[in-house]
Image (tube, rainbow, N blue to C red; front, side):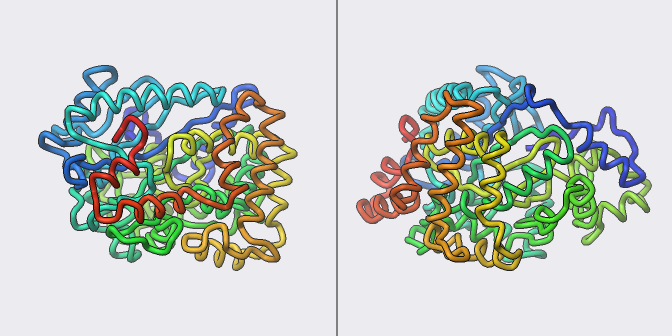
Length: 448
């Protein structure tokens, strides 16, 4: 969720102005924290249908219940679309997915505590509304046509734009749910090393966190249908970026790439649509309808880019399905162990160093269906996953050993080769055709 701030917008006229956005974001190691975001898929418990915004089962009523307890509501055209709570935010995605952007934390136990408190609050707020929340990365009931749209102007623009650039963008918006973590960097060299590591292992992470095998109420044959959706959502702004593997000047490389990605919109007291194909480079050079590009425009544009690793004032890990609460909790310590320890980061990067970019693209295409069975050079992704989890454990033991127990669920998946997707398929077969039992089986504990 990006809340637009126009109050101190500063004009930008050159690439150097844009680079400052990244260059000023570096932090010393002792100040590094980790943020976490996750989206939950809700259903009306009595029917399994997607909740609308309005009405007795509505997402609007849920936001109102949260706002009544704590936080500042964010309104757009009279609708509450988010709640600001100090360093945390509660927001909604286009299909009513309910998102928590948790406060940045120094220790992973803080995140686990925050998540448990949030789940309890969500349970209390959801019960009178008749809502349940599922531990999976894609809505399993109904089709996309059954899902109401949330009332956000940003999504209205994207809804029109997505079908012009890919075949699955509307599915991404309305049906999918992810868990992400955000990590700090010290400077450009550190950011480059972290981005390179992340892109080296992103398909392994996708396979480990796979949790979206049910589509249109059928077993799809995919481990992560959410990841398959992303493979043809908008390839100008999503997927893998080649420069992560060979550019040390990552701020410049990312800026050059972002400059040539078309804008969705600009914000001037409301979202303003721009001509199709207008890039930030053109906007910065020529302006649009008398408006000149500002640093707020740049921050907004960066929030509309969706690569596997997104660079802002921190690095976002974006390739994982949302699933069980233990797996939501596990991603932060996993990435802390991999990216905040230099030895682990080097070892993780080396795991796939022999692969070409074409190899990586093929793997990213195959992982959504084959998951841990996907071939990667002389290994399977499952074999590499075992090594990666061991590397993460080794790194975490050095940087935050108290977090090691939080790795248990991902260690179990790596060791057994059985993913959340496999478990979801088992539950789907066990309760085939019985929505009430399926909801109870797929829901997070306390949220069913």
